[in-house]
Image 1: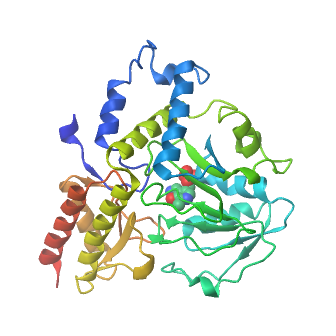
Image 2: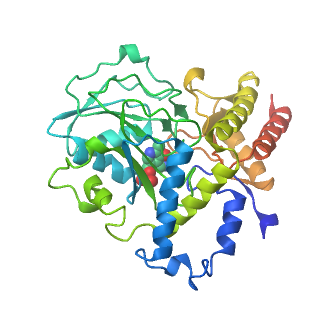
Length: 366
Ligand code: PMP
């Protein structure tokens, strides 16, 4: 029952809003007048066709997607898009610019390198804690695109505004972990994509927003399921799509709309992240977040305790579990703690974590 549910700080798949889960549960066995479950329904049925159309409409409205973009519902995750991007939009060019700011943009560059030469616009400095200022980026004027990860889920680094660009070199943005968490500025973008398993529902669905003029140029080796042209020509039902995933995303988009839209979410997300960074920064080093303040994520807050005292961090995680909080263990690449505070995580749930951090500090500060 709902009373046994925990506070979920998972990085993805992650918390889905209660109202969405309850509606999905009510509609689970029998959808509308169909007499069957969505899980049992043909992807070419009238019921599902209505669902996918409505999902696209809501996505366009809630994200203010410009008309020159197509909304494609795909599979293969963000990882599939790492390959789909060069396969679809190289357009005869031999090099692409990459801004490597963490694990995910690094993986994207490595995957793309199978299909196109990669040029890093700055030398990544590890550990990842910052984004070099745009004026220092070395750009290739003949690049097919400039790739960046809008929010690095592992390292907690977020672009507060898109990189500067010019219309000739389209921006490609991975928004897997900050999808609809803040208003998005599409200017100069060619592709904006992300999986839905963090802010938009279940795992198994990937949304690619692709500018129309970039569709239809794919490499002849591009698999059909990664082809923007095929997906677009077939209204995202070239093959069997993630039927249930699309339905859940529709419910999440309705929840966003009914809650006051993306501006409202962003205001709440800013307040949630401010609470987190305030306690970290006011703890005189007991808690520490290595990310430069200007680039800190509103969605994923990584931090260490006691300067990286693993025993103390284990004690913290144990206490969190006892308080019904799950998903706080940091990614193995960085260790420590990571609180993922996606759209569905409420202000009160964030406060509960902050209260625990306060208590923990009082009890354990040496
Ligand atoms: N990009 C980002 C920013 C991510 O956080 C993730 C997954 N955590 C991915 C890409 C990869 O997504 P997927 O697992 O859907 O392939």
